Each structure stands twice: as C-alpha cells, then as structure tokens.
Length: 225
Image (cartoon, rainbow, N blue to C red; front, side, top):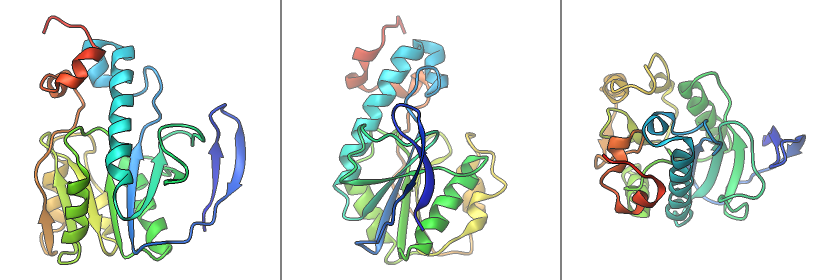
C-alpha cells in the first residue's frame, strides 16, 4: 500500500514509501500531465506554439488546484511522467502518485483500483484542462454518488471531464478510442444497465477553438485569428 517509484523535480530516481490512511470516505483523483515544453497541449501548440501552450496549461493547472483543494475529500494527484515535490500541488493538500499503465484507460483503472483498495467508498476522477470546472461541480458529483452508481461529466468534444464511481466498473476503461469524440458514447453504452447520472456538459481545452472565448487566456498568445 502506497509503495511507488517517484522522481523529484531534479529528475533523480528515488524509492519512497508513503502510507496513506483515508481521512474521508471520498477521494478525488486529479490526472495531470507534467508541464514540459512541447509535451503538453500539443494540438493547441500547433496554432499558438509550444511556449504559449505550456503557459496556458500551467494556468489550467493552477485553476484545477484551486477548485479541487476546496473539495471535502482526500485529494490525489496522479502525474503522467514524474512526481514533483515543489509545484502547484501543495503536498499538505494533495497526495502525490504516478500514473501506471500503457494507455489512458489502464491508467485510470489502476488509479481507481488502488484507491478502492484503500477503503474509499466514493471516488471521482477529473482532468486538469477545464476552466469551466468549479468546486460546485465536484461537490454535486459527490452528492449524486449517494443516489447513483456512476456519475459522468460530459465534455463538449465527446469525451468526459469527470467520472465517479462507488464500486469498480472495469468495463468503462476498456476498448475505448481514447482522445476521440466517441469516448462518451462508448462509455454510456457500457453502463446502460447501471444507475448513472450525467452532469452539466462543460468545455475542456485542447485546441485553439477551445480557448478563443476565454479572455483570461488571451495574454498567453498572439494570433490574428
């Protein structure tokens, strides 16, 4: 329990043992990509460049940290590449882990499995690229989990920005075309016989079309569009 390999901010490998004891019946998972130049928001970078895309992603990370830290749940950040000791995710608030798996489905399934094994009764996962996401949406999702087996926050691009479960539904994570507009449809097909709740549809940020309507992001890029 809680034994994993990690890398600090200097890139040195070290073995750390972290024993996490639940302080709540609820857990919030935040999946994040390490904010590295040329490695994040690549579709957005095709229009505005790598540096501007990176700066926007860092802004999104700060937003996600702010809205999620207010949630009354144990909070876990799962990094894509390496765990950072000193970053936007305050170690006094967020428990830090590394994603495990060869694709997004495997990585999410492994994260849910690990936390269910710790004894959590309600687990929600969110991404880190939604300016529209507020603490209220997270709280509503946990509230709806009291009455439903599964809660999903649909994204406008055909995926989802939030997934919550009370028990493991492994089928959700298998045989999906991750990163495409079919993910939500495929997921709903998998859970058609389950008692589920759909939340408000929100916009996640992947392309330049997604950022145009956010004035607070204009400072990060220059374009004639």
